[in-house]
Each structure stands twice: as C-alpha cells, then as structure tokens.
Image (cartoon, rainbow, N blue to C red; front, top):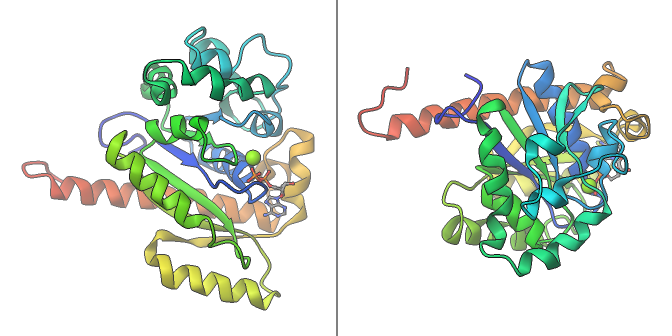
Length: 277
Ligand code: ADP
Ligand code: MG
C-alpha cells in the first residue's frame, strides 16, 4: 500500500519553529529515500528561503511562478511544479516572494486553507506529499498544518531542544481541534546527532522518556556529506549513498513507511465493519 486508507497521498509537514535544526535536510532526504522505495513524491517548499527548492537542484529564481502564486489562487500546483532530476520527485518551488504571503493571506477568506485547496487536485497523483515548513509558527506554517495528516519534527539533542517544543505541540493540538481533525504528531526525529557528546545522549534519553514511541528509532548522525550535498543540488542520499547520513535517511524512510502502514491498520481495525486485510 502506497497511499493512505482513503486512496490519496499521505501529507506530512516537516516542522519545528527553530531555524537550522534540520527540517530542510530531512525534507529533501526523506523525499529521495521514499523515491528509492518507489513512492511518488511531491515536495512543497513552504519556506521563503527556498532551500528545499535549491537543494533539490531546482533554481528558485528561474521559474515564472511558484508557491506564492499558488497560495494566492493565481496558479495551480500542476502549473508551477518542477521535477527534481537529482531526487526523482516533484517540487513546488519557493523563493523570497513567498515572504509576502503571510501578509497577503491575512486579507483572504479561509486564509489558513489556501494550501489545502491547492493540493486537493494533486492528492491522487502522489503517495507522499512532504511540506518543508519555515522556522516560525506563522500563517504559512498554519497552511501546512491545515492540510497535513501528520507532523514530523526534526530536532537536535541539545539543551534548549525541548524548549519551544511545547509551543509546537500546542499549535498542533489547536489546529487538530479547530481546523484539521486529521492532524497528528507522527514523530520526533533526532538529527545531527553526535554520539561522543554526553549531553546529546542525555537529552536523547530525556526525549525518549518524555515522548515514548513518538520518537523514531532512526537517529541521523552529524555527517558532513549531508551538509555538502545541497550546494550540488542533490539529496544527500544520492550524493553519497554510502555515507552514514545517507544510510540513516534511507532507514528513516523505511521506518516512516512501516509506521504509516501500522497506523493505517490500527485505524481500520477501530472502524466497525471495515476489514483490516
Ligand atoms: P532548517 O531547515 O531547520 O533550517 P537545515 O536542514 O537547513 O535546517 O540544516 C541547517 C544546517 O545544518 C544546514 O547547513 C545543513 O546542511 C546542516 N545539516 C543538517 N543536517 C545535518 C547533518 N545530519 N549533519 C551535518 N550537517 C547537517
Ligand atoms: Mg529550512
């Protein structure tokens, strides 16, 4: 099974309101890892920095239209979508134009549902749609959360990592209650991990005891090949397949697919009259 129980794409946000915690690296490498699993993947760049776009080998300043026009209802996802040749997935590009969207959207009806409206028409064309969120709990992020079934939170195991996490978890709960009842926390992914640092091990253990099975087993190590790959416009998993970072993201893709499948079976088993096989 590729798509979710409704026969449409699994839509996941990669979110954390802190910057530089590995959201974009996770979005790009997870997209490529899912492609390696023969999944059809769309990566939506919801960050005006356009790093997911560039890191996928798509020039953020060359396309006539991007996510900004899509959110304002002036272009369709199909029209602005570009192929990442290096990653094997499609990209909805973004650039600094998108930073105006937060203000422009405020004026619109259903301002937090514009991305959902836009993605509705491509839900059947993909198995996974990944949304790389900006480092803020802004209206842009809200648009991401409003159309996703799940949130993946990459985090570094550092002293302040847990600080701010409660704001994000509370935002997810609020969106779940008021805008999007399908939204849930899929899991926390420990990234840029350095086993030699005792503090990181301590924080990692703290995260496990606090969030239990919401923590992914896969841990992404700090690995220079993952950091080099974006400047070549290639996902780390493709740039150096044998690197420890690439292997971790491939494992993460597998773990995510297993988790999604398991949760779908549990959900079906809970629905009366629906068989689980
Ligand atoms: P965010 O999207 O949350 O701002 P990025 O994914 O852009 O974070 O990562 C921030 C910086 O850290 C980037 O320079 C990126 O290349 C680097 N980086 C991310 N993950 C790793 C890793 N596992 N090992 C080494 N460098 C990493
Ligand atoms: Mg980013």
